[in-house]
Length: 135
Image 1 (cartoon, rainbow, N blue to C red):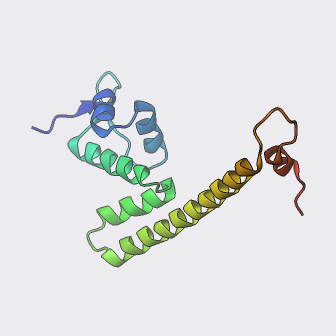
Image 2: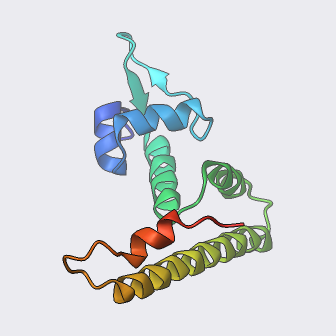
């Protein structure tokens, strides 16, 4: 039986908060939910499947705009997998760029902490570096 569930149950089953579900609905990632006679949001199994899709895409770091594209492709039976792969590859490239930036930050901080004596002296290369002017 395909019985509609309330937002609380939908949140539990999709591993999203009720607030995030309402937000994704307001952003157009999810069709507006049906309402009960009392005005409560009701979600079908199809809605839950979409929410799990969104949750999984978010866990992989896709932006809302990218998720909109992915959802459109997911619902489009005439799509080519090349379109999906291209979008995923763009995201991989961005993740790798961000990872390289984070690694560079970590390397800089490692170097600065190795240069810092960490004793009672006031001299600190970490603070000196943070306070340095850059051109």
